Image (cartoon, rainbow, N blue to C red; front, side, top):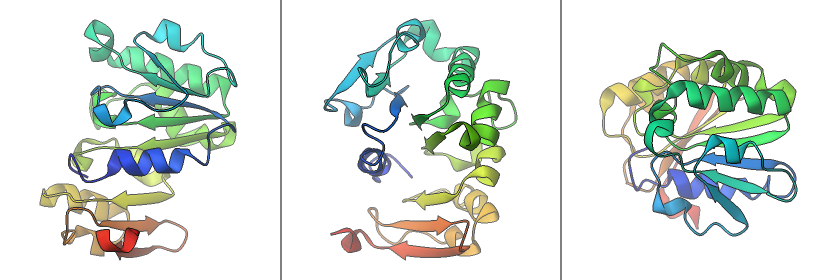
Length: 196
């Protein structure tokens, strides 16, 4: 979904299920104000400090990398390898396309959490504004999709190719979304008005 379409709000709401059960890591590479003031969160700038956190002392860690660390895909892949090794973790990747080199090039740590993370107790929420730039392994391994307002036709078609052709249609209002679950293979649209 585009900026302001509700991706972060939805992620924050769904994290309530994991709070207190698993350590939650949010990679906020955009330093999004929507991730500010999360109750109980610890805000960190370096991977070194992130890797020193412990559960349950640090239930939510929001990593806001900056400088060289924020522009080095191998740094993020080291984090993904660390998460995979420890298991039992919930991840929120707020703009996944900024955490890998490209849709075709990503490291082994990223591949591990996407392809085999479930067996290690890892749950991942992926958010993006440009679905066409996201590694395809995410689409083939994901169980649920929430598709908010996406104006670019290529982005909608990318998602629809892995889910349901109906998702290629535009979202009629800026606050609605398509919901698709791989188990039932049905796409269902919810208007922003249906969320109350």
